[in-house]
Length: 466
Image (cartoon, rainbow, N blue to C red; front, top):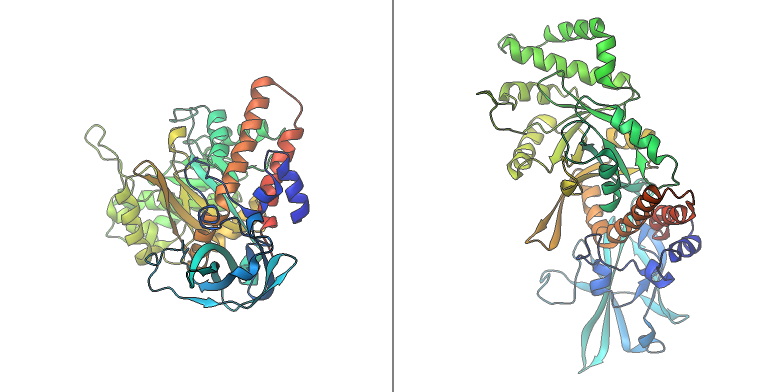
């Protein structure tokens, strides 16, 4: 979708063209503003995301500066710092003069984005007491062509409903995914695949931007294994093919260290057989919350022995490692981070909530950089290392904090997206979800407004590209 078409589509949900182009507004939590809204001062760039190399960028001022651009100057700040005009914000950062000219009432800049990073154009007033003073900062980002060709999609593939041990119905869980601004979801009840199938079927009537994927959390091994996106239920498939499954387990057990206990060898072999069968079904085999620990039940702890964990992680037979599981305690993430370089370096990472209540949804997720939000593209991106695990939480009940883990290029870009893209994206997705919820409650068959809202979500990122 081109920028003009996107602005038309977004206008139908109550946003003006200026609102759409400048990417302002509060975050989906109603509290967090984008960096552009906080520091942009109404200066609107022609695009936010560029390919590395030379590009033309224009920055249009707010109405109060019409005809007064000669009183302003533009400089450029390189790197990740999102400067707010305070000299003590980043005392080591230095902004350099930018080459610009006035063109049709806007600053026209022939930029040379030599490397992949954030570039912040700083607008200053030249006529206040003889000293330049900060007016606004306008950040953009330059990407290598390989990442520029992809799109960022947020999703959670590990969520529970009342069809297993969750507190909310599948429909409530699915709608909550809209409220927290996801692009895809996969309800993964314990040993229950049908929940995800039912939600995919139920929401398929709507022209929605949300992708619904199949999933289940599998429990043949003591380790919890995720069948993410498989074409069938692993739980049911194993029941029907038990002999084949047990034969594979027996073969795997022969390859395990003899000094490991029989219980450890059995559980590791079963986990690896699950990984193999999930791949046969076309899914992503995810090693879930390796450092989750529960209270003892009848005198027995339900967490994994360290020997079992070391073998499963060290042999790396899984496809992706659930680095972030926001339902677990912070120490689980800390331990996972310590463990990852030792055993799992090079394996793709996943972030999820493992939510058993809608209140927990949105506190962890994966960002996948893919060609589209169709499962084959999501799968290829995850297996290709184009995913980030994100831990999102509120500090002191107000400001939303985020920690992203994965490839450094993607991590750096994700923090630009947290500032400049996701706040508006999340609001648009939430708006779409509200319309779908209304249609479900009223039984309305008029989905025209839902379609417009979905197009606004789908067109937002394209509108930011230069």
